Image (cartoon, rainbow, N blue to C red; front, side, top):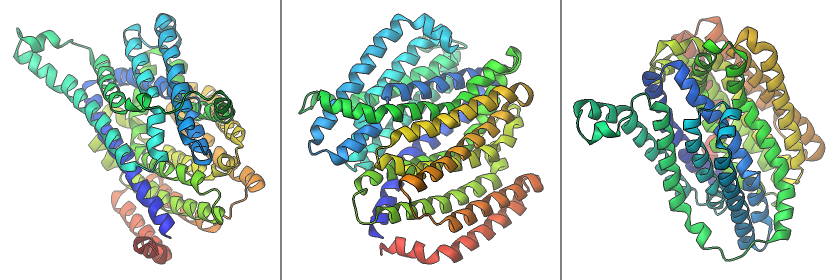
Amino acid sequence: MKLFQKLFKQTFIYGLATVLPRMLSFLLVPLYTAVMAPGLYGEVSLIFVWFAIFNVILAFGMETAFFRFYSKEVNKESVLSTSLLSVGSSTLIFLIAAFAMRESLANLLNIELRYIGYFILILCLDAFVIIPFAKLRAEEQPGVYAIIKIANVCTNIGFNLFFLLVLPKLASSDSEGIWNALYVPDYEVSYILISNLIASAITLLILSPNYFRLQRGFDTGLFKRMLRYSLPVMVAGIAFTINEVFDKYLLTELLPPEIAKSEMGTYAACYRLTMFMTLFATAFRLGIEPFFFSHSQSDNPKKAYAQITNYFVVLGSLILLSVVVFADVLKVLFIRDEAYWEAMAIVPIVLLANFCLGIYHNLSVWYKVTDRTRFGAIISAVGAVLTIVINLMFIPRYGYQASAWATLAAYGTMMLLSYALGRKYYPIPYNLRKISFYMGLSIAFSVISYYGFNNNLYLGLGLLLVFLGILYRMEKEVLLKLLRGK
């Protein structure tokens, strides 16, 4: 139990590093929806779609490969230096090539040319810190990791607030001064990207000593072995990212041009309300991924993996129901313009989809610890195909509703496929009875509250209290043991 206590302690700190920054950035949603119409917010969302996809390409799976080889190789310094140099050199090549072809890149991605320079620089700055952040996680330094992540987001938010709120007021009150000279009207998207660029540059500055303290050179043989492991991870990552963000791009391509970016902006804003599930799943994954590898050779690791998944499903079920019950409260707090509220119906669907995704990440331990990462690529590719096909078929008729259901279909299928294949190659004794009970009860209560009674808050609170009562009755002993570290 002390092992799990340590795991949850690290997960809590990683959660702080993930949840707090994203909660802070989530506070930008009211700002963005207040100063930008849905169409312009759609422009910003489209840029961040491509950020997500290119981040995976520039990492090319080396982060996960670093964890795997750092945990099993005797010469850890060689793993670190090879990882740093491979990601760093490939990023430099991309930087030079992207700027040389920036006009073609802008046309290909449907991003305005005036934004493409910021886009390239932010991508590269973020790529340079992938391995330094992975090193902090591998060495179990979640506190340092959290501080740097939070500092990054605080910097980003600070400059967003300055450029979008403070600078316009300073410029209007001082028409002949320096603030008016600095202010550019209708420059909101550029200001958002400049804020990201400054934050990313500061983060790289903090972590740059990792590149100057290398004690080993580039190990070609090790790199080839790491690359064989990482490339399927990259393919899986690209496919996963398509599942996560590509629907927003397809909305801009498949809907009539006069409404495309407006519809996408509306969908993206309401999609952000599902971040509570996404943050929980991400924090959990950050905590358990090093744990998977470091304990793969311990006594009875399968039992530990099964228990971890049980805990995830219990907490995820609670989060799913809680967000659904308070959805109408959250929309008032975080999405100030009522023009965005028309897409609220997608929130329960996408919440459940991200819950399935979190379970999938827990189930994925089997192909990571057995070095069968090609199966991760295959599973994610199946999800990506489902995402693309369903969106292509149904967006023209159903708009963003089709995108929400496509997300659920993709993540649900990935979850079931991973479980089925895991039973064959690395069977883990999951408590299916408990998992099905909590997940099914949470879904049933969510459907009753949101769709059966038009999301009546009082009824929803009653169902949430019933769920908490059942949870307390069934898990009381386990919770007490965790708290006591027994």
